[in-house]
Image 1 (spheres, rainbow, N blue to C red):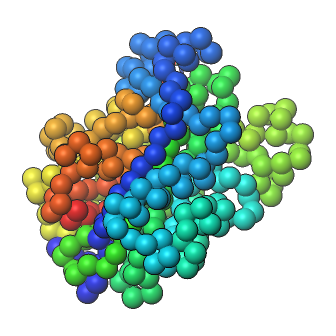
Image 2: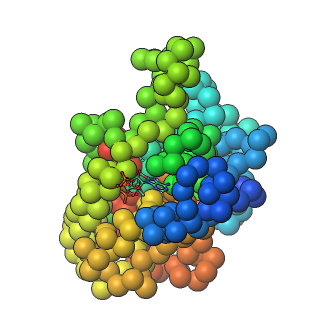
Length: 332
Ligand code: UT7
């Protein structure tokens, strides 16, 4: 069932944080030409949490990361690797993981940001387990944190109804093969790089370039319809691959936690895989698309609701800008 590593990584603790402010579909109706009915039928989303004026991505990461370390009963000083999956860095330099390090107290950890858009958390899980398998790391803090609403064009109704902010975190520790992460797969196809993108503010079109303001290039641009079709196919395929490699079927799964992008994508992937609706976890209705935070936020909610319990087999599958996609099978 497992992937040949003698040692693998288990989830020793989990935590999450959502900013207090809630933006409802009714609020959005007052901002752009949209309706609760359109947003609900096309996406399933009813509300999302958004950061306050004085809050930034790292503030959410610190709250979620501390909660996960408390849950694991780990001293922050014992964390030797801190991975932060995000597409919405606090600033280009230094890495957001470095910025969060002092407040988290992970003073002995190497700090690394992982950039794979909405697949960032599952990508970082795959990174973490390699370091644990080789004995290079014994306590990994992995946080998926995002403030997509800071990069949202509030005049673009095709994107501004989709996103929310939040952070979810896990602590990973060594475990014998057959427990914890059993299988991971990850893929990238850069030919789709323009379908979900924030084109401005990097080295090609630096922040001071007037085009950033004139053409609104610092905001998320997405060709949603084209993304949708590839996302469903790719998520189903990679999930199937991971299940087959592990020699398990959907009947063995206690829960499927897909990236919470859109209820229609989630339903379509679940039905392609033949997973009964009651085994497909969703919280997108309450949080919107939180990118790299989406899967750990959903996991934390599933644990809090008693839907994910110790010993359960859970499949995580993500898809995002790049395109990137990834899946992990875990004995929780
Ligand atoms: O997290 C990374 C992965 N990203 C995703 O998974 C997003 C994937 N894509 C989607 O979820 C969907 O494509 C959307 C929810 C973004 C859009 O749904 P859709 O069914 O693909 O709609 P559409 O883009 O084909 O637009 C249909 C119509 C258009 O009007 P016309 O041209 O048919 O007259 C849009 O202008 O809906 C219109 N529209 C809206 N109407 C009311 C687009 N946005 C809105 C809106 N309110 N907010």
